[in-house]
Image (cartoon, rainbow, N blue to C red; front, top):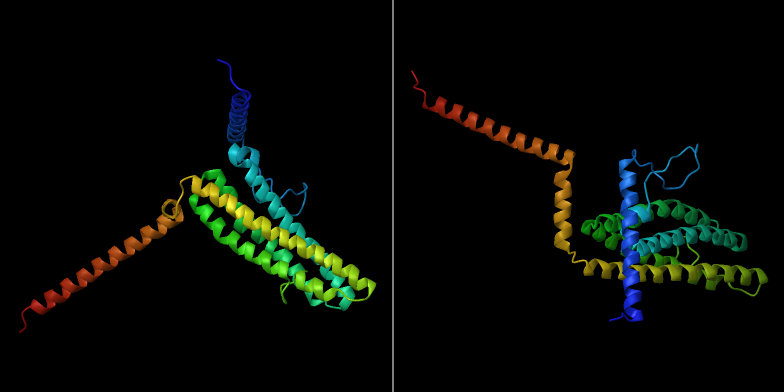
Length: 270
């Protein structure tokens, strides 16, 4: 009995996924069998004063079914980084228009701080969560990425002290002068970019949460994984051993002191 076109298409898709997974495992085995992996992120030119800090390869380390969403999450982080850089340009335009120089320094400060923090605090946990099927890293990602969404909302609004070219800032910039209209349009475009980033944040959070729930993970599993990793750490084992030894030694010394005091009280007096 012949197969329908839909069945053939599903069979071809399944075969393609299996082939891609085998190729990924083969590349991973080849990488493990070779020398120590060289860090490749951030991609810096050779001879630069700083060297890459991480090894990152989505095609090798991430299972095939999760590569697309991890890649989209990486693009989202790049989008946030690009927005922060464009925001500095908008702050410079505002400074030339109304002399507001404080926003420029705040924009530069937040760009320098938030760019590495966002990568370390929510992209890397998500990367490691999909790589190792880690419930604990999923929980870290959800907690911090929710905070990232709230920050994106504040940036889109453009409150005082946020250092961003938000909607309120754009509306205040428009005036009757031609320069005010031009600067206002640029600032409004940047504000809409922050709005798009906030929308992408909540969409990505929902998608990854659905994957997390469908995998059978739970808070209890994350707690068990955290406990296992803590006690697996050599430093933690040494610290725990020292605490136990100190407690036993203290109890032994107390028992010896109590026994000596009892002997002195029972000794005959002349």
